[in-house]
Length: 188
Image 1: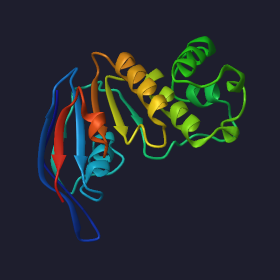
Image 2: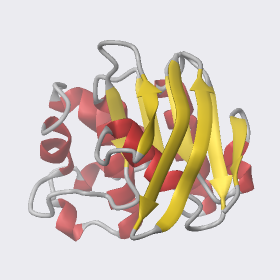
Image 3: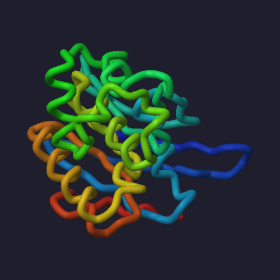
Image 4: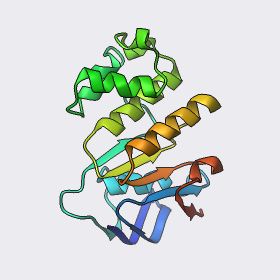
């Protein structure tokens, strides 16, 4: 379980999180919804330790391993999808290709640099990278943005399958993404 206790964070005097509390139970799925600027991404960054809270605490079990899909894909454009994934995941090309194919990436594009990929294809590589990492907490920040509806449903199914029994915390603006997740509504 991860406990977030009385968390506060402000940027340049603008309060983003104020006395925020949350418990994330192991193996559960959570969805954060709220208006832009309400602190959802800030919360994910705090959990990952990318920024520090002004006050409050995040209590996580020792050995917690976090994997994330950021709002930006954060790929190295000149590298293939497999090379991007191997930067953070110790898996072989066969497993990487299997997951990329399941996410709808065409086989004939697997050995091309991601610079040749569309935005939706890059998004799926970023998702594959997170799923193939060693983790017990998966953080997803608007993971399905830029995907057409059919591809989105295909990707959601793969994410649900590969993150089964893991703790998942997703930021989304799409109410359809919340299905199967405990909803946490953020207010500005």
